[in-house]
Image 1 (cartoon, one colour):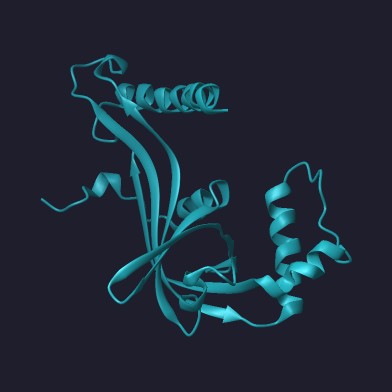
Image 2 (cartoon, helix red, strand yellow; image 1 turned 45 degrees about the vertical axis):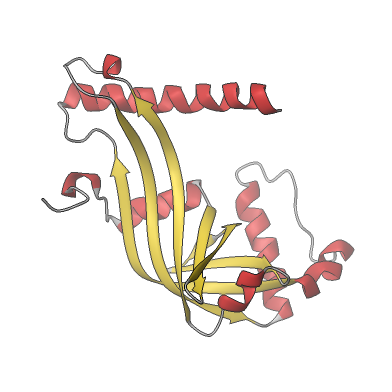
Length: 196
């Protein structure tokens, strides 16, 4: 049997891009001397590339240039699905959406491009209300440009893993979808009540 099962793969580029846009905080993985370096960064999708920024003191910054290989994971919603959710007899499972990408990283050296990219990223992340606008003449922005490196990742491999009970009867697939919505909202509230 091929793994993962075909019905859990969603390699529709448009669906993958929607995950990236909705959940832009990525896990960025590079390898140096057989050791993984992992950083969590928001990445913005533009024309089959991912644009990001990293602190110059982060050791992974040196690996996000010169066409170095990088792997990226975006995480969408996920939750435990109890057999009680289904209308038929089932076993417990876990449903989730994840996107795995591979690419080549290249540094963007221009301070003007970095500045514009930070403004553009803020605009994207502030949507749809745009309550905050990062102005080009913001003195804090200019002051911090020397401590941030901009990079872009050319995507070479796309893989969408959408495990959403697709192997169940249509009614049970719908019930699992409703549980994914309910559980994500409830688990966030419960978690925040415990830690914040």
